[in-house]
Image (tube, rainbow over all chains, first blue to last red; front, side, top):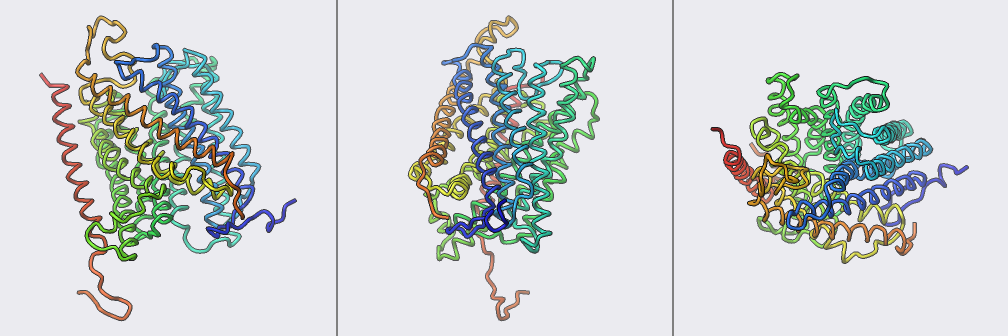
Length: 508
Length: 47
């Protein structure tokens, strides 16, 4: 049995003490995440080339299967696998602590992996299970689909529990003193929101599973929608909190930045816990069971308290970078920005992620979340335009940026393809900018989301022909953006896989 | 009133560049809000 001393190694570059069993779990979860990202990215390309009406690549049945798989694989599997890797990193390496029960971590990983593969395979082979990410009742998928989602959620919940126990143990064992470091504090925020989210998912999907195997005679669609949106949008708020924690990390790693007022940053994380999930109600604006005051309050005043939190972070991080840069001697209003480390992949990812998340994702989220505009924008391509700016251009780019430091540290291998890594966030970000613009501009014209054929609607007589011909240019923009973004994403995957397989071994 | 004591040198506002970026963001928000309202209003007119 390994002793406490032999279970750790010390990184000669960073000085971090790395708990070896935690290291293995960080690597397998990150690898599973990148694998999910690869699958989701290939599907994204095929979907993008279908929504580009001039190309219209896939037949209808494959399109709907792939959209269902893409949503679940990217919004849940890629994100949560990577976040679990981040939780283990934040609770052990950052705190100089051990992972309390690595066997529990492996159990969580197996549950998540089996669940993810099961759900994806079912959506791929069973056309009746192509019921989209929302899986709205009364559409009914194969019981195996629901089982896959439940297994994944249970695994994720176990991993989050292990994270909390590890943090408590680190405190009890005296591994760290005082307040948690800001990055770990941000991850705790994400983990708390994740508990709410995963319990919401269980409440939505367990009855649905029982209904699909015939143990429940019926399921009320409105009840399902209420429960689902305790999972569907909060899952993205987990990503948001984790992303902001990564932003602080990248700012520190690449410029030496320290928040001007760390207490304020912590308070902003607290606002996320209290208010951010209330915005989910915007999915239920036309559901008759909810009162108007309840809908308006949650999609306006309460949601804005979480927006204030994002504003705090959006000011805190650039100002910390500015102060750190000025301390290096850069003068003038923007000298600090001009001389920022733009060729450092972590800083490039930070800049792309913050600008695109804030200027596009955040702004469109506030606009489209409020009741009046939501009634016009919902179910148009404006909505995917919003969440590709938040979850992909925001969170995914931030996670990619962190990977350039996390993977070499955890695998003890030199990053392969540093020259490509310098450009990757910009290429990916540019592709996403085109993709998101294409979605937003098409949606602005009323083009619906998810639909396979918006020119002829598969010949449906109601719509006549060429219903959205005016949007052909903006839909082409969407397709071209998808191609460039997938190239950028592909570069990231190649760098990660090459580092893992062929990276030069480093000491420590 | 600003104090000047040993170790408490007055620095002034430390992040003027970020403040300008924040104002740019505010202007962008106002523009996006206006464009969204006006274009959605045209796409879904009330008759």
